[in-house]
Length: 157
Image (cartoon, rainbow, N blue to C red; front, side, top):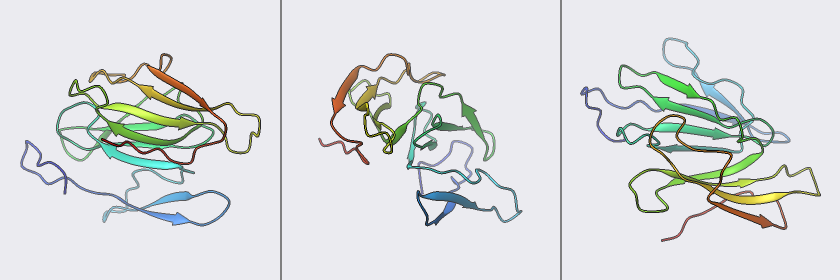
């Protein structure tokens, strides 16, 4: 259901179909009018969270080889702005959470291509800024080498 929008319109939610195969393959089930939103993405993680603090749900999609895709929901209608995530290649899993208590969403990610047996495999944290580009992907504030490609990450209180 999400947080109510300031314009009084309800949040909309998208539905994806997973096609089995060598890796999860997400294909959007189209809007009623037939328009696609995001098509044919080999995704390892899809997370919803308020990245920019405007009360609207934003969407982050990761995959093993290419940069992640961050979609910031716009206040005017049901549209999203695609944010450049260069530097996020090889992210396998992600969690969106305020890790340092400043009220701004941060990212915790696992990184490493699972078919590269030599790694590196990492768990990284990026501090959120609340303004575009939202994260400095060249400077993680936490960077830990792990001995295997982590398929998921959890945050405990």
